[in-house]
Length: 309
Image 1 (cartoon, rainbow, N blue to C red):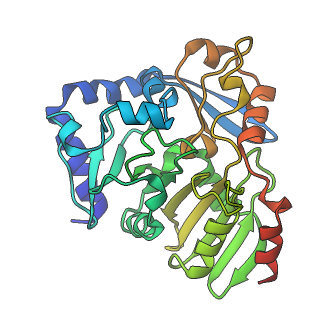
Image 2 (cartoon, one colour):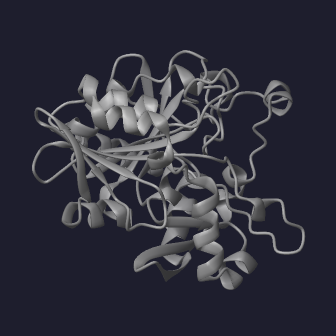
């Protein structure tokens, strides 16, 4: 049995013994959605009340210190069992889903998101055709930045995975079999990297094209990365360097939208837990959200350095 088939069976088994999670997955069939064209790109809006727990998560150090880590084994619901697909990680069914099948891939160690090994995400993506595996940086959508985790879900749910298959972008760099594309036509700032394996050259792009932290080094907490196995059997990487954790509208008392973008939002599915936000958000608001949280990497000196290397 393939790893993808094992994962699907695990998902089915979990919903068979976990009625609260099953109810939330069943509810996905009735969530409200609508599509808004932003700069000729279709952004799907999803009104998903269950995701309020993630969207509004307090991720400051004091809040994290005071709460129990819900990804550690002793704090998980008793019905939540785990699947082992890769050494050092537990695969869990996510009880607050966005995807029809949504998984959290949790490190055995209680360590921060910054300790991520992207090779693990790349390996899983190549072993799980039909799924995406993605990483949210600690300041870019991770609701548990204190416990290293990846996520996975159905590939065809994300508009940008379908779009990038047909519209890979403009070639800006290459090294051997690894090609880097800029997707400049999108409302969000994105790179598309295609490679047989996660090469050192690809990792250089993922590590360097980020805003500075306090020490003047690339801030690796400011990124979303999505991995998938393409129809060409190559590893396809969608990379979103981030400038801000949340847009200003998240804090605006007069025109507030509860939106805290992670990888799913950056791939064109904007998650809106509140119905008023879903009903009232407009094209200009969405464009502004992406503009505020996206890092314009092409204006950085590191980008110019990588182009010349």
